[in-house]
Length: 77
Image (cartoon, rainbow, N blue to C red):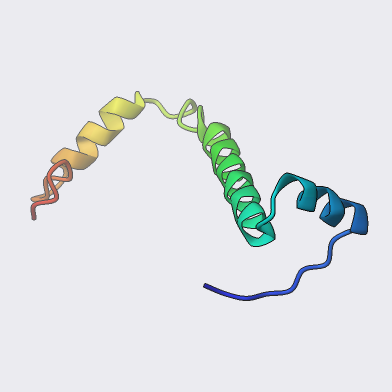
């Protein structure tokens, strides 16, 4: 666990005290939700990025799995 200082507007801090008696837990939960939202947006932005390729993404993955002596599906070498 890391201790840190943050600067917040007074009204935001006062409102947060109404919602939760544990400010640290409230901030941790809010940060988790924010990071999850950012990750989801990043994943959503990546959809369709393989559209310009000549092959289906499933076919590309199959070729990667069959490439060389490695079986990517089960992690064996």
